[in-house]
Every structure is written in structure tokens, then in C-alpha cells.
Amino acid sequence: MPRKARVYGNTGIYHVIMRGNERKLIFHDDEDRERFLMIMEQKKKFKEFKLYAYCLMDNHIHLLIKEEEDNISRIMKRINTSYATYYNKKYERIGHVFQDRYKSEAVEDDTYLLEVLRYIHNNPVKANIVNMPLKYPWSSFNIYCGKGVDQYNLMEVDEVLGIYSEDRVKAIDLMIDFTSMQDSKNFLDIIEDDEGKKAEEKKIHEIIEVFLKKEDKAYEEVKNNKHLRNELIKEFKQRTNSSIRTIARVSGIDRNSVQKI
Image (cartoon, rainbow, N blue to C red):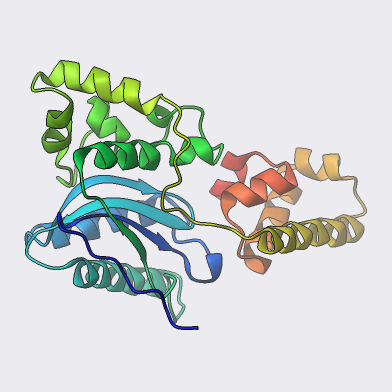
């Protein structure tokens, strides 16, 4: 089946999603996330784009980005190539890091821009990682709120806040209120098919079953024993492509414990 033609917009602003190849993790630790932001900083220095929002999840990335000196396809190719080079060297691997084709949708007006911004910042909440955007350190929400530092000089915060109000303090309050509102619209997202989810869950349960037989332990004993729990987490990560969130949800092991291994 031929690929669906990519839709290009008049404003040059796009909501972009990049996903890990075969649903694998893009980020294993904070060093990986920091390197991705550094790469964005390097590319932005050449005025290739403006960045209005980002959210780095375990196995996918959301960006709200505007073309400047280059077009979106070349921008994303350069970012992807640089990060893949770093990732493959660090983890001593070869091959694709990202799914071969990024997903994008054009953002044609200010109203939709603010709605997409809200959607991106609420992604960790939707994924049940945190209960509010402010608690997630790897999105641009804290920078907008003045609670985080834009250490890589990535964001065009004033341009977006100016849509709300010329008064910066008022604009931040309006943005926070708007972010907390419910929205039933369908936005560009990573869609996991039911069969894929079931297969992931089945694999995790199979790994648990084999591990318990090998150790001759009850599952609660394993979860309460740090050494055994860490060994089991290693099994999940080595033998599945599941995200940290999925491993934590299906196994019942604390997400922080899964992320540390």
C-alpha cells in the first residue's frame, strides 16, 4: 500500500511525532534526553527552525516546530541522524533508532496551536506517568510556567504567551488554566493497536512466569527483593520492546524502579 502523502501547511508550523523503531525505547536515561535537547540546540543555532513545545516520552517524542531557514523534512532528518549516531555508538548497535517516517500535522491558526501545545504538555498525564504537567521534567511546560530553565535556549516562549496576553504574568496564568481544561479533540498521536498491546502484555507475563519457576519464589517475594526485582526488570528490557510505562503497568513494579535499571 502506498504511503499517504504528507500534508504541508501555509504557516510552516507542525506538530511532529517521532517514534522508536519497532516501538523500542528512544531514551533509556536522562543522559539520552539531555543529548537529544543538545542536538536540537545545535540545529537551532543555524536558524533552521523555531521550537514552541516539546515532550520527550520513553519511546516517542512530540515537537511543535516552525520552519525557518529549512523545510520540515530536512530539519527532522538532521535531528534524527544526529541522535541515531549518538544512540548507536553509546549502546553499541546498528540500524534505525526511529521509525522510518516521522508523523506530522500542519498547524494553521493560533487557536489550534494553543490546543496542540496543551495536548503535548498533557501527554505524560494521559500516559499516567504524572498527575499534572508541572511534575514532568522532560517537557517544555515548566519553561512556560517560569518553573524551569531553558538551558539549551530552545524555546520561543514569548511568541506563544503573547497569543494569550501582552501581560506576561497574566499570559502564564491563562496558559496554565487552559492546560488544565479537558479536551475531547483527536490530535496526532501514537496509536497502539489492541493486538500489539495484548502481545506485549502476554510476553511480560510469560517472562514473569518463567522467572518465578527458576527462582522458586512467589511474585510478591520477587517484587520485595531488590536484587531479584532488578534481575526481572533486566529480563523485561532485554527480551521485549515495551516502554517503561508498559512494563510498570503490566508487572506492577514501581515505574521509578523500572526506569533506573
